[in-house]
Length: 108
Length: 113
Image 1 (spheres, rainbow over the protein chains, first blue to last red):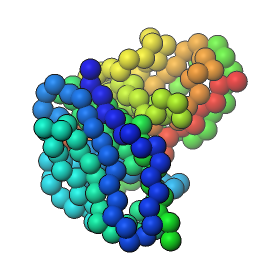
Image 2: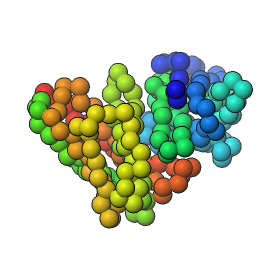
Image 3: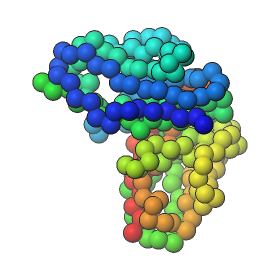
Image 4: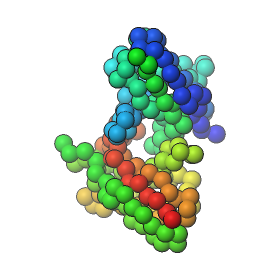
């Protein structure tokens, strides 16, 4: 079954500390993976996708097919990174399958 | 470009009623997807329309339906409302190809009493 798992509902780290938001997926084909972010009182928006292999706002995510993971990382957290983060997988039918989300809190 | 708009933003209905939600995509976007977001189930895919055709459907009962018009605007309808239908309904639009970014609207908050 196709599934996206974000094991942490809540992650709290201090400003300046490294951040890693975990995402594991289950999918038989070739996945298209995304990280979306929702800041307080803002719309859900795309943060990054694995095919772009880009760094957005200091965040990176590498697709590890062996471990079926797509963890989101940032070396030094900033207070403005506090938000809800969702990992999502798009299958061959254009359907986005979402993880439950991780609330990231950056403590000053 | 104007973003995705959804109307109404808030809605209160009673059990058994039906409701229609509207979504206007970004100009030029031909794909519209609908999602239900609840605290318990998170984000769940409802359906996706592309050029007036339903291209994909999630695992929701037939009470949930939708359509897309020639101008790409989309509506979703929920009939015979149940308490469990209370949720934030999100609409997202994209150009339509598998790796195109989806742009989300602000959502319609539906409360069923």
